[in-house]
Image 1 (cartoon, rainbow, N blue to C red):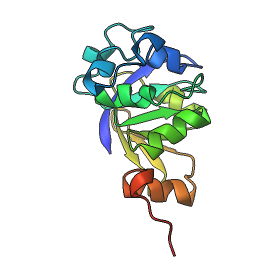
Image 2: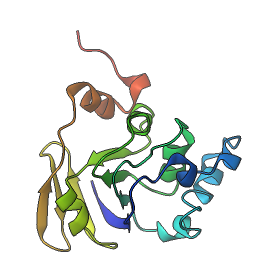
Image 3: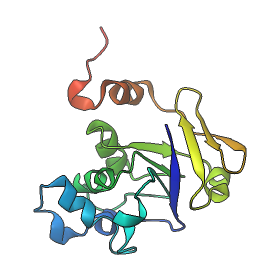
Length: 162
């Protein structure tokens, strides 16, 4: 996967920031996308035009278990979020619903990525390449079952190997 990064240099971006609670009754994905991240960046939706990778600090997606958070981000064109760590329920909502790819990167990789950098994520090789800077960093390994769910296109399409 290749894309341009949008970076927020802050830890603990929670699901209330990703999609405020006032929109939890909304089921239209495009409408959710219009309100994604509006608590910290009212222009997030338009800022993501032509971009597909969100980079943020530790514990991304903490807070409530709302599935609306990855849906709202995906609706803005986010295909992957790179962060040093994720809240587990957010991580699984991303994977299970096949909304976007949560990619755990080391602190060094996180710090070296700037807003607007072109990145290439290679899950099979466990690498993220910063094509703008000519750097390459390792990403955290993904458990086999998670890889299977991602490859299947979400939990509902996943079949347990016999």
